[in-house]
Every structure is written in structure tokens, then in C-alpha cells.
Image (tube, rainbow, N blue to C red):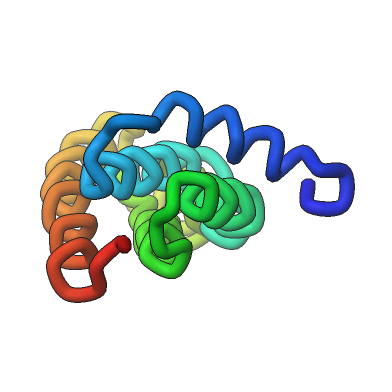
Length: 129
């Protein structure tokens, strides 16, 4: 993505959509994007895809890219809502007799809590500007 310029293209588009939004809201949006993506692909793949986009958008918006990178990294580790986002979830899915809805029911609440608390703490403790 970086070699082809695709990451910067997506970052510029995302930054264009985020113009005028508060830095905390931008941080929450990137956190949310990583949180959703990591439910369907591995956390490593989520980080590889989103960090160049988040850092580029932050730079374009005049924000500290390190805060956006932290948000993406933390969110990429929150695969709680599906059995496919993380290998341990997949390993216990069948033998444990779990249903897809079991993961969603418990994971959605945990993800919601973390989606509020984590960006807020990054914003308050690290800052974004």
C-alpha cells in the first residue's frame, strides 16, 4: 500500500472526511475502524493495513500520528466478537460448543467499553496534537 501510494490516497480521503471533526472523534473513528476490521482478519493484518492510513491521515490533519497508531494497535487486539478474528477464538469455537452469537453477545459489550475508554485515555494521557 505504501509503495503504490494507495495508503496515502486512502489517508487523504479519510482526512478529507475528518476535516472539522474534533481530534478525539477522529481518534475514535480510527479505533472503531480497526476494531471492526480485526473481527474478520488477524490483528497483524489489521495493523499492517491501517497504520499507514491512520498515520497519513493524522499528518494531513495536523495531528500526532503516534496517537492514531496507538489507537489502531490497541483496537487491533480487541477481537472479541467473532471466532474468526483471532486464532485462539477459532481453536475453542468447535470444541467448546460455542455459537457465533456467544462471541458476539459477550464481545460486543467488551468492545463497546474499550471503544470508549481506550481512545479517551489515549487522548487524555498521550494527546493528539
